Length: 184
Image (tube, rainbow, N blue to C red; front, side):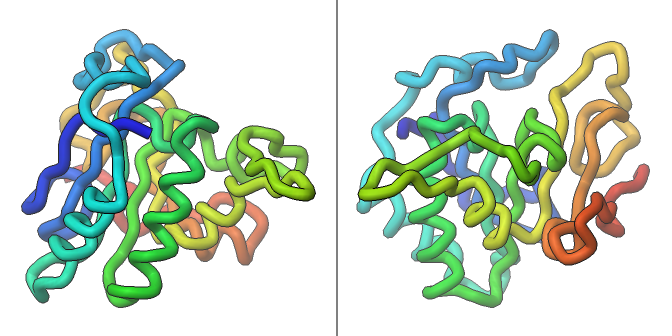
């Protein structure tokens, strides 16, 4: 997986002060996308163990609320194995921090019972999308739609996008919107 940039004091992509990882690679190609450079899977730098170490270190100060992963598209099959490894480390090493993911895929697409989006090859195929969701607090879902752009929305660019409480949604078996799914 490649990444375009890391912000260690981001206040725009989630609650509080956060570390944000902008991954590379996206097949959505939304009209009006603010980060078109990251559509290319080869854009930026290779995500390494040292990159993960840097992110974990950046999350340790008390004033950092958590990690946000966006892009590009974190939930592209090519990106999911590294995302899963990073989220596991976050939960193990800084479990009090929240995890937000921005995805052009909807919660319904990502959590569907017949979801075949991403598999890890081993002795058997294991779908890792549900594992990523189980480690995620908030999902901002849906493609950016320029005709639904609304600058008064918190943490999203267009009105079709939703700010979802992932853990409540997984327990309920349906989308439960976060308290952050509102306007300014």
